Length: 190
Image (cartoon, rainbow, N blue to C red; front, side):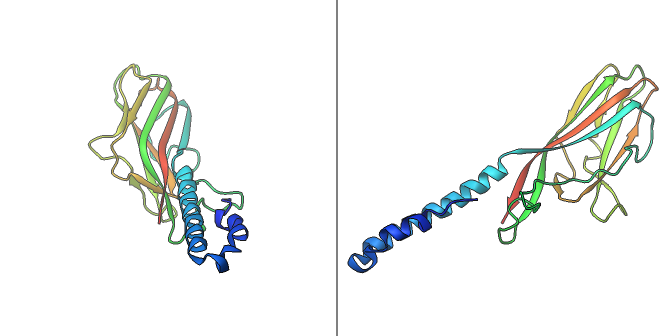
């Protein structure tokens, strides 16, 4: 919670309201300006931290649709009241802007491939899904590779409550222990 400079200084400068009205107005305006800047700085603190979502796909991997054991849901940061960060701001729209998706494998592909992981999201409770990646640039691992990444997205903005689905293809019977992570910044649009 931001402490208001105006609320703290107003009792001190209140006697000036009658004696020197211009000085009182100037000091009040400065105090209110400091409050405004403090609020903006606090919002920036909330925006400037990274957010991530991690998926673990243990064991030997096999081609398939919807291969994660559950439908993970994106939860954006919340305050102590369990409300989305900046919920008290008018017209707020917190969202996660993707910057990077990484993948790592405990045991790499021995042959074939590439191993392709598609991350899809749904905003209608799992009725329809759309890939976050462009068709021409999927997240993949080639033979012998244990890490990979992607920074090119067809859907680069995720919302609180988005459901995820993982589809896999190009497995060879040796690839095992996959971890996928999405990194991005929390953005609050007023």
